[in-house]
Length: 449
Ligand code: ADP
Image (cartoon, rainbow, N blue to C red; front, side, top):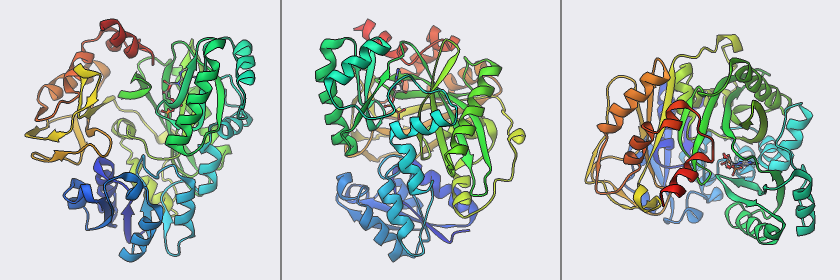
């Protein structure tokens, strides 16, 4: 096992990783920007180092300084969390190349192969996993796009190779929209992901977003931990996630899980990863692989009892998974609510400010992953998520009731949050019935306006 691990991240995920380290007997190193001197993750760590000014580009994204810091601290491993450098193959390569340092994640080559969406589509295709109809190569000209529009039928999506979270994705509803959409997708791809390469997919009308958590060790063992349903999205961003999905048949669940396992197995993948699918009319289509821990990994942990983050570290240290696929059992239902410092009444605009009151719920079935406490200042430098509330219960119905209780007792004053929005969602018929698709929330919110 490692002796000392540096977490190249901030906020709740930094603490989540350090919590796993503690249980494994690994010392922890935090990094922080000037804006985060007093942040929760800094306080939590055994030691902490400043890596630069507030803008992420000068601190949390400065790979060179982070690797230097790890060496200086005497760390022997780096965990990237999610966001920032987590899916940056170049950074992973830098860590791999640094003497005495181990990258907690898949190999940089694998990240590269699966991180670019068209390459990943090719890999999955070859493994016999159904992919969303579309191109496996980048497209260049508006003419090419228009031809594909004819072939698949509109709407189609132009997607940035490196895109994610809906960024770099443009929906095209007819030939006259092609030129603008192509330009915007390219521009966003370049701005957010440093890659202006784009490709085309059929845009599914009302799919479910279903993703499968996988764990793969360096000894050829691949396990899946079942699916998560992340269909409740606002502008392609996940808002509430749950496991298991309320809308899969047992047969489809089995097929998707096995497809994910086969896909990453054939790709020679190691460590934790997520295979994302769109599901429509009983068919599933591969969308992409996320080669990192995800925000919503928590709901899978709750229903399987498996510590995914600890396994990331153990796998990186060369350990073998000590359970078979048949040993993975699913217990009850779990829902994660992203508590963001945003104003739901004002188009979810971020609302920085001071947490005058911060009094989260507790008691049976309630888990909080957070890095804030009362009187903290919520700045505007990074994303607006202040906490994840994860609720676990024996079944979905009771999970809803438990969630109502938890959200009711979640007191925050000083900034607006998404808590009132979540409470409304628990009363929403389509969500309660599990009939919502990825389009549902945007349509509802549009209709209210
Ligand atoms: P990520 O899953 O990393 O956020 P994307 O930006 O590719 O990556 O997708 C974000 C969301 O956009 C998905 O969860 C899904 O709701 C929607 N989406 C992506 N591709 C398609 C598609 N071809 N058809 C319909 N919806 C899509």
